[in-house]
Every structure is written in structure tokens, then in C-alpha cells.
Amino acid sequence: MREIKFRARRPTTGKWFFGCGVTSGTDFMLGIFPLDEFWRAVRVGDLYKETVGEYTGLKDKNGVEIYEGDIVRHFDSFPGEQKLQVIWHEHGFYFAWKDGLINHKLISTEYFEVIGNIHENPELLEI
Image (cartoon, rainbow, N blue to C red):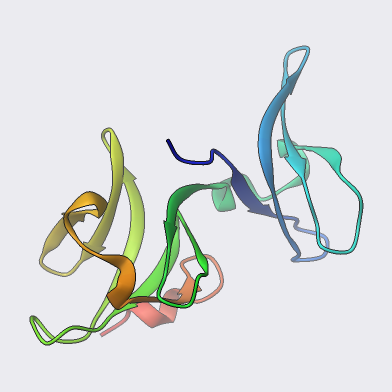
């Protein structure tokens, strides 16, 4: 069983917010836990919707949580160093790279390091 939580970025400050999805009436909100503030709810409309990403339940070699939209560096002897994007595909999280998709359950994250995310560092995936 993995922890269900999300992150998203606020347009006005560029700050990332982390928390759980909550509903209030007909609005979906993100219950957030910014590092310098107490818990509160933020309407998803107050955040960059395209930056909302779910926590995969995985951590990289340094203990950093891996979220949908992250870019990770995979370093192993085969097939060598690769930069992968974390995506949601059909019914699970995958690591996307130039040669296809790898299900997160098939590989060990001890060879992964989060190096950025697609929203702030898209150039990391450029060849």
C-alpha cells in the first residue's frame, strides 16, 4: 500500500505545494503542506493544473520522493546512463525514455536520482 499524495505549483509564486486531494462541495482541492506554512486547502484553480502530479510511492537513491512529471537519471552498466520521465500510463506509473516505457515495478530505484521535473527543466530530456 502506498501513500497517496500530490504536488502542484502556484502561478503567482512558483512555489511547490504537497498534500492530499480533498473535496469541498463540488470543488476538488489540494490539502497542502508547504514547508513554511500550516496546513490549508488550496483550490486546484489556484495552481498550475498541468503541474499536478501524483506521488509514485517510490524514492530515489537519496531518499527523494519521485512524483509524476519528475525527470530521473538512471545509471547502471546496461544500457548505460539514461534520463527518464515519470508518467502515468493506463493503470500505473512508468518511466518513459527514447526507446519506450518501463513499468516502475520492473526496476529498482537504487539506480535512480531525481534531477528535475518536466515543468521546470524540460531541457533535461533534450538530446
